[in-house]
Image (cartoon, rainbow, N blue to C red; front, top):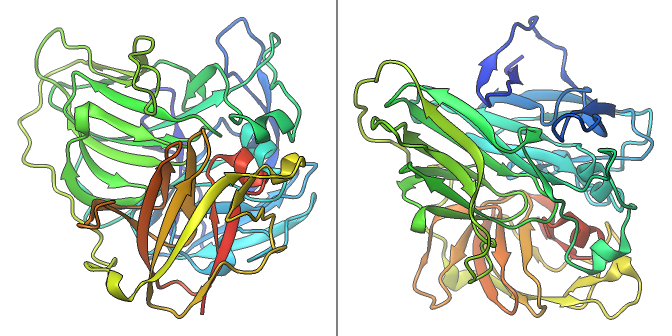
Length: 453
């Protein structure tokens, strides 16, 4: 079977582990209770819900253009489903309960098969109303790396999966689910920040001059982050799973919303005394204040003999995506993000005045396959929001209508009172969600859908 299981070590380095050959047998995704040490000793281990009972997050690898097969087994006390964020796969495998499938009931199973068309960094997370917020907050998610033939050559392929947790004094997950306060307010964040399931900072050692690819996932339920680089000069080679021509982050900072992924490549410094690090900067990406000092998420250390100087970092736009989107023929629609007028916390947020929970509202629009679409997200609230379009890759348009950003996204950040416009070609048939990646907001109505015929 063309998928390889890999273990995630405390150093964050992905290394192969022995596995028996899987010819026809799918990779099992057994969702069940488990325990994990999230906070440092002497805090007890935390009761979590995990995939295969493994440390959070499990990491899977696949090959571009080769079918992968999973068997989802639900050993939780709630129905569930998994959405594969960023993957342009068949609609039936998207995991959108109420549109593409029924929920997987406790004690039941579901076969998941798809062929990833694009190389990159993706993840799966719960997508069932209203339990997805609790399942994600308790640890149900996984990373999926799709390797392609044109990936940049590196010495180390590392991941940094960043999450935050709200724990009580006994190290257990605190708060009710669903939480009306989180759904109506600023959504669920927690003071304990982990990298690859362990309290920050984590540590990586590599030779001077070693070339590293770092795949960063913001797995937080609601936290916006400014991800900074100290003592490093990274080039971004992938955004939300889609490859791009290398570019340097502005001010050495990446603005990261829930669910976003960035792939960066950098060479370890040759100089003595440099302390490279991935950091959580200041007061966050949406604040102009300096805020608290940067906190180290991953600390890098050089050790050993220096490696020879490397050539340029090579990456390119995904040739499977259109070079041009004909905006003049696009279906155009604005979506107003507003606070719901209902006192029901399950209807706290709306797109164009409608709160959606699965299949209880009509489609926003229907288009023929191949039709260009432009959407404007107009945030009429005082908090930041995100907008994620399932099953498609999209361009972020310049507000002056003079072009688009030089990379593809599957979700965008919409600041308070701001407007973000995106464009995509509706080339994937089926019924697709548009939703907030702030999972409490998605569960409280900030979801809609469209159909590609």
